[in-house]
Length: 120
Image (cartoon, rainbow, N blue to C red; front, top):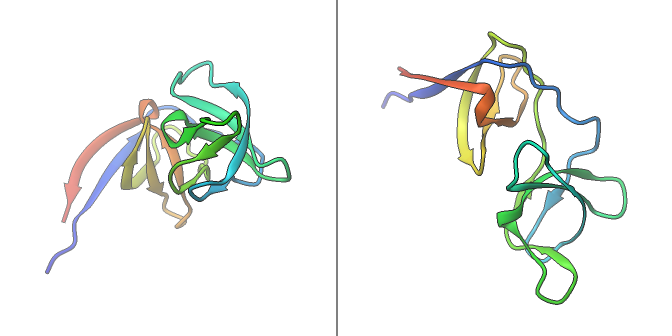
């Protein structure tokens, strides 16, 4: 069996936030700090302790006043420069979970990627 990889070219540099990524499981309580001015479906959230990051609104709910995660999510982002090539691992809301040439994995916004061909 031959494994195929889908790649993308980074078309705009991306600098991840300098925060310990927020890792959520269903039911985890988060504090919403502010909406993302460039991506309306995302908010900056923290766990009230040391972790924070951009989280898609689609994985959050607030039925009783407390905002809770409804799905597993990790806010880890990776740095990328224009012209870099990344391997696309999973498509999420507004972005891709990617792997760079150094083996680092994390989110990159979809608008910063030009999707390439599948490599054999």
